[in-house]
Length: 185
Length: 375
Image 1 (cartoon, rainbow over the protein chains, first blue to last red):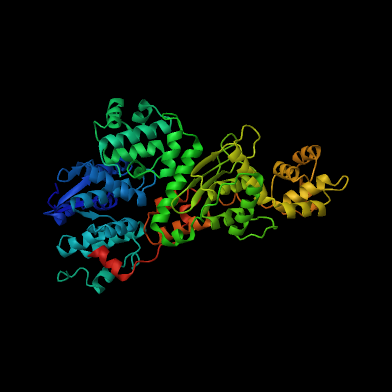
Image 2: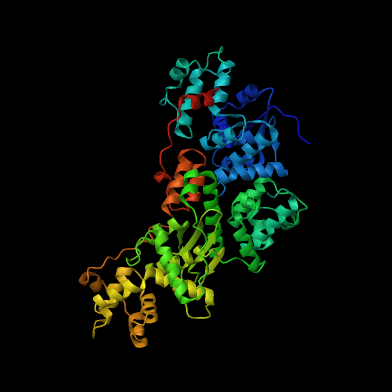
């Protein structure tokens, strides 16, 4: 029994955390629509663990419009184990693997920032996007300004992104490359 | 590949027993009721990915180990040990390295090409044959028949053997080795002195050359109840490190046969060949270069600080500085810089011997990768 493909975004802890911190969860809901926003049990667990020290994560846990999912089928577990072999150490990156496994099993789009995970997604033929990609979509949809996203891009550079512009350089770079022009595909 | 819940539950139960944990202890560690864990283990309740990750972490195993096929050598070794008994620590350390090496070999072509086992050698059936195997091994390792065998940890890689040094403490096994599809893995107890470590690694090389698939050695070169096969491997190891002709020559040159020269000769020869005194004593005795009484004297000789200065000895500590084989480290770094594995997994494969800051910089994104980020 193969499931029909569903149109969903499944997000890793990092992107959810960045968006919540910037107060843009509502933007996420709008940008994702009509796609459902899926949160796996492992990502939910990571959010819960982090919510003690970072209260903004509680907003994600409280967002009732998201779809919560536990990976449990043989296919999901096999896929999860496969990605674990490349990414996990102890409890690190378990959420990320659950996102890739969900995306593979349900043909959803994974939203992940880590480069090794994105490579794995590519090799496995999984549709994949980063936080910045989502935000550029939001700019094109007229929901966010380039300046707003620029400040978040600076924050991303400090973490998992190695982008070809310095902090403060997103806007100039995005204009130069026509990334946020509404006519771009 | 394990996909049904009964098989997965069974693996959880076996791993729990190997780790020496009760159901109560494991269920507490993962925050479920004991009855829930019992159902997971008998397959009547499926584990979620998150629960599997928590079980793996609590038992010190990797997630994929519960699902993937277990390497055949490990399966057969488990079958001869007592089911339900906690594993000796060396088994867990060996398994971790075997699986790591297999993972790296599957994902890095250069490593796969470098680490190959030679064709199997016939099992020696006598002392002479063990000596012959030692000569063949020297040829294989690219070492002359009379020179001291220095830097053994690097040279054994030519025989497809990857040596890992793990500090297991004093009352643990000396060493172990496992054959893989490509190459072999040896774990040597870093708690041993350098001479014993070299002897242990030489002994494991013997096992690998005659294709023994999984061996754990508790007392290499011990005299108590060693089987014939092990005695021959001990013989091979001594012969490999102390080739007869050059040992005899060195012993003579260093004054081993002169009155009062025994102690100095023992110190100088042991240093030249980098062996421990009891190995040297045994080898000299079996080549009939010394008497039983002299062997006892050699065995109790200790190299002092004064000896090192007076005889200008090299006090090199070649094996402990390298807990991992260089060729393996290089392959892990390649997997990391090509972004096939995460930083966390890279550090895990490097067995905690590297710091995050020591890892190489990741390359800058190229233009096409940037588009992937923002499209």
